[in-house]
Image (cartoon, rainbow, N blue to C red; front, side):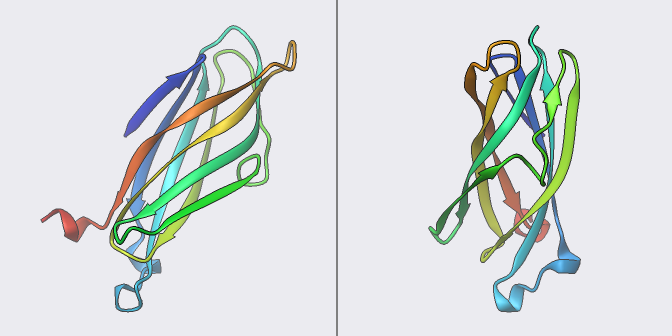
Length: 128
């Protein structure tokens, strides 16, 4: 698990290779990732947008942007945690992701970016 704290927002990421949804012969490698977003600040915050940078080990780079996460724009009160699971497909058995969430403090509508730490997507057989 990797973790990073930005302006009182703690983001942790766990990953798992999805062999049952992967097809290495067709260059299709599927990974799931679980994100935990914890509000360590004294203010309520809302996750407004996401911005991902996705890297394959063959040098391919993709960007994904959009509102919220998995269809939600959750509000986190101080001390609350929001978790969700999503997925990413790669053309290679190794890659990485990183990015940020555009957050908004509820009290004054001040916006800031909470960094998503870089995490690696690696098919287990590549670790041997």
